[in-house]
Image 1 (cartoon, rainbow, N blue to C red):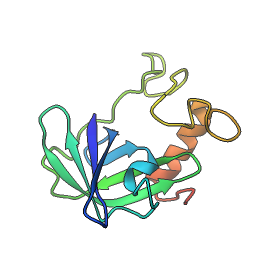
Image 2: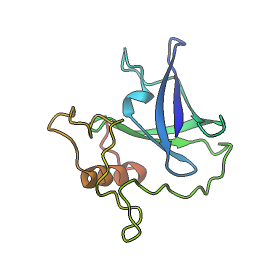
Image 3: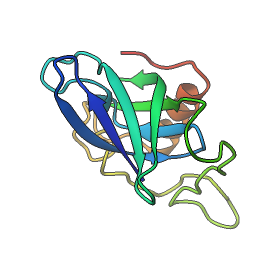
Amino acid sequence: MVAVAATLRDGREQLGSGYLVTGRLVLTAEHCARDKVTGESAARLRVVRASDGAVADVADVVPDCGLDVAVLQLADDAPWDTGLPPRRSPGSTRARPGCLTTARVSAFRCFNGTRPGGPATPASFMARFTRLTSGNPGGC
């Protein structure tokens, strides 16, 4: 877990949360990367690792506003190992390691039924996540 700290253009700060999925990628809600009042992108984004308080700057944001999801690319000088292994998803099993099959993620509105059209399925989310991390986002 990480905190996503956004410094807004008027100097205010707002906090969100995210998941460190590799040594340089964080999965968060897209609205954590922008001002919740004005909708403007944050002037600066940082992540703070929950386990030890280490801080890393965000170098790039790849958003998907349709799912309210963003992948944050951390700066190369993030103070932890770049080779952190990807986290196993909660729906994975020994027979299907890393496969998201049954998990529901309530932190993101696309999974809790408030998304227009109802909740996303794990398969549709993973397809969008793969596009986000490969640099081919759905866009905002």
